[in-house]
Image 1 (spheres, helix red, strand yellow):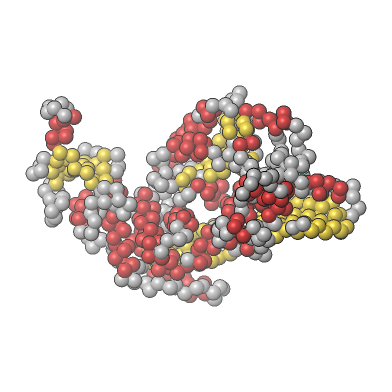
Image 2: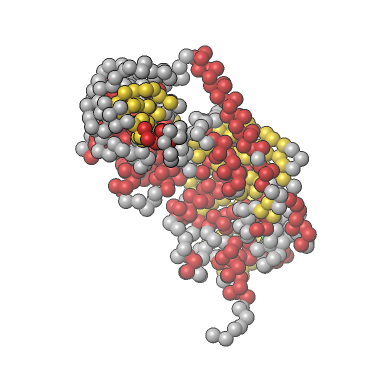
Length: 601
Ligand code: ADP
Ligand code: MG
């Protein structure tokens, strides 16, 4: 092929691909335009994950009838005049590319009216065709984008499932409504209203969006120096998620994902929340626009810092300080109230009784799992201290009876860091460290697996069912996978549009203080493994459940150290936890001699 100049349409389509990757990027551009136009009410409506249609309505300034065509031309913008302005951008958009790009890859209809105009304008762009009319319209603008990429089948093929595309948009709407708490947002997905905020300030918005369960656990953060201002909330250590979906960062009110900030915050939480879980935080960073470059990528979710990243360092110190204060508070309240409140558990009979009484008022779905009577997960009734309760210096002479091979003849030395139990293996001249959490995970996991295989998973009913507030995509997951949850021993009923009731949880892990974290974590796991086989998925969920149960720290069965070891020994894979970490480590005397340089290393 000879070298030739590309025609305008082709250039547009190529460029459009940079700005418009998927339906969510259309929504993002349209909402940013509405914000730039000073809207106080914005409604976003999508159908079929945005593939069929996206409609964004605002009550902003509107577009002058004679400027509509211009707005849809590449590099036409009302927001900057020249290159210098790029460095002091206060508005969201500025490249003047979005509308032109959207037009190149879809059918766009615009309705708009400015305050001074008597009638509104209607323009429809469909390929080369343009249709115009004068229409009645409220002040502001409505953009309708249909058949995205339908004229570019290659790109349409790259789109994910409608559910996945819709989830992206849902997440975006949550972020916009938090980033702009003075704007009232409505989000309608396939004719269902999924999100509605009143635009009455950040605190109300957070409660409207996430519910009091979340906002109750937020600690306010505020920091400012000559270079940077950081404000917002970080969750206390009892609230966390299985992914980063509840980490919100806004730089100069722009929604960003900033790895540097993520890393800093997560390192502050290191060791304070379970491994593999992610902290929850909402953070507004304000910095002189001249010091950052938002021009780095057309979708503008990454910012380039011209300052060095040390400007963020105070963030970690601040969070550490807040979490420490939280701990002090907790220690105080614990002393006053003796013990933190536990979720009450009651028997199936009591539960059935209650259910019958309730049934008159409301239909309650019949549980899908057969229940069995309550049993102790471990046969022995004797109350012996759990390793966590062991005093640091154990009587050195206590001989632990070990029926088995792996842990035969061990003498208990004590416990360390509330995690490791130390033994002496005199015969083999070794010191043995048992990670009691890993060991419990292994034991629980195999018990769950065993019951699951026999379809005998039992449910532990909660005396007080726990309300579970869910985001729309979590709701989808709960509804579409309800069979999976009930086969694992959960009993979760819908309560309202965005709330479920956890009535029962798997028996083996049924001693959690707050089962909601577990359900959230399971939902996150489901989301991450959309393509897994059903069987893998069940396995993963069980692993997850064990981790969550053990990490919650309230679930250690009443086991003595000896019972722990013998239960571990009876498992099929006693050497590792379900995630493959070792349950115990043996340190040979030789190694210890080497540390002390008694023998050359
Ligand atoms: P940019 O936002 O980068 O300027 P766009 O292509 O997104 O570029 O929009 C082009 C222009 O169209 C904007 O500069 C603005 O003047 C006008 N415009 C777009 N959407 C709206 C809206 N919802 N209300 C008012 N004006 C709008
Ligand atoms: Mg724009």
